[in-house]
Image (cartoon, rainbow, N blue to C red; front, side):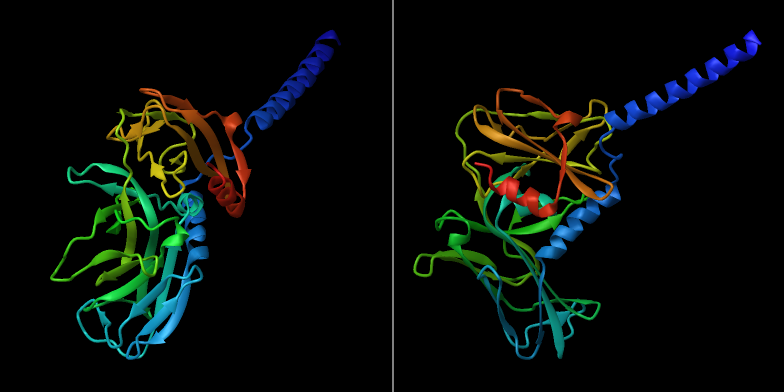
Length: 326
């Protein structure tokens, strides 16, 4: 009887131990294991929410004014398919415009440009745009120039240092920018117009376009590390930098060290002594997970983000939080 009672007591104790252990695990694991596909879906949704569409006749061309006041003019009869055949009939314009770092984060469209040495460095933007024209499933191109007029007051004062950039999605799925030089005989460029307080773009290539210049800082710079919890990596999360007093700049840490679980970058572009906000984003069961840390950069700074720093939020709330950063 004593043996039977002992066995019963051990069984009850085991059940209690398992129950307590499960409760502790539930308490410590505040978020689901992040999923790369879910994270990309959040970004796709954010980009879809910004997409403006307009149907028009190719023979007529179009003058399209966006919700922010940017004007896109595509001349009549100036569209063809990718084989060079002229297009007629109804076509659809898709237009995306981004001016603030909040929308840059949720869509993963930071402003990082290649310099003459091939280094990827932060830019100050006057607006980034994606223009696509399709007919059914066909992607169309333009054999002649179209124009875009961007109000400068969407990003502050008119900046005469701005130039035109063309965007490309790299192998990691990140948008990076190159200066838009002449290509295939096409003229493209940008002019800051004082009379209309606008940036006037002419271009012959659809896709991502940006009004930008390199961020300038004369002091010393450093390479920083942002350490994240073990379950996060560069496929299911991302790290961005928002500089103090630079509302039109969003840098990205585009390298990830799997052995030590930290994000960084190649070139050591972060100014020593400045204040910035480190912005971490990921997902949990399809919801946005984020952390924002304010830091002052020292030489070789390491910023640690722990699970206790993380919170969930909505897309619109995260945009508001980021745009409110000084």
